[in-house]
Amino acid sequence: MGYLVLFLAGALLCNAIPHLAAGLRGEPFPTPFARPRGVGLSSPLMNFYWGTANLLIGISALLSYPLKDYGVWPVIAGWLVLGSYCAWHFGRVRR
Image (cartoon, rainbow, N blue to C red; front, side, top):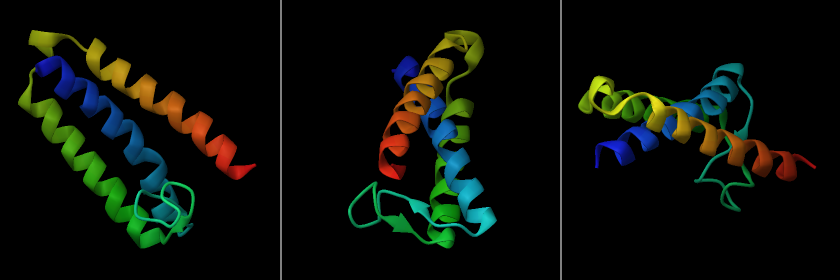
């Protein structure tokens, strides 16, 4: 269970970055709450809130399962998997 939680923590921390960046720059960006889902644009405020939620949940997950017991690899794997998917997905959305 710890490996899965740390994998998801890495994914959430990676996902927080584009949403926080867009929200803090005042730019719209897709969120799961947009129409169509993940393609339409959400407001900067919604992106800020979504990014903050991802950040807080990711940090909480990291604090729940000590890295000394599981290693950093599940976090790195979650980061790389979600980051790769987002780069591919949003590259297609923006074309």
